Image 1 (cartoon, rainbow, N blue to C red):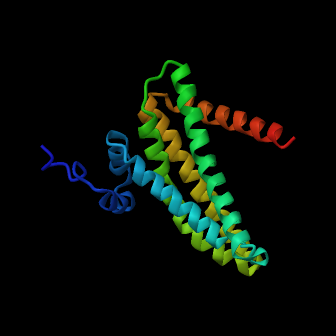
Image 2 (cartoon, rainbow, N blue to C red; image 1 turned 90 degrees about the horizontal axis):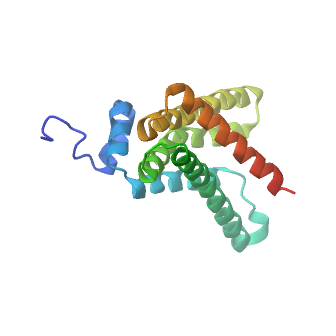
Length: 185
């Protein structure tokens, strides 16, 4: 019966294209058949792009540069997987049934929204006030879009209502903020 549904046999590259043309069915497909591996690759490519477009410490040589890049890479992956796992366990403790794999895949694939921001990181480097304002506005848009996809995913994967999803996201952000505050000593 997949003849009527073009997303039924979508491979990851086709799915990437469909995210730009028809995002809701593509995101629903990711939830139905979690592409965890390719979601991880999307996150890894985004984080690698963030690392390469950021200020690199060439002063410490290639070894120092690789250590800095690896630390940034590992930290960013934890900043993705940690909140996702926290949201999953909070949902399970609240009696919601959902798939960690589906939520990981959905949030991993939603990192695609940050790809245009990678070019902005290079654009903002010139330091003019206009480039700063444009970059700030567009980064706010991309971050908001990322959180909207997570909010929508909480509803689709775990069955939270729209209002409950907002509180779940805000509550987990508060918990993560407290963890970061107290971990800094």
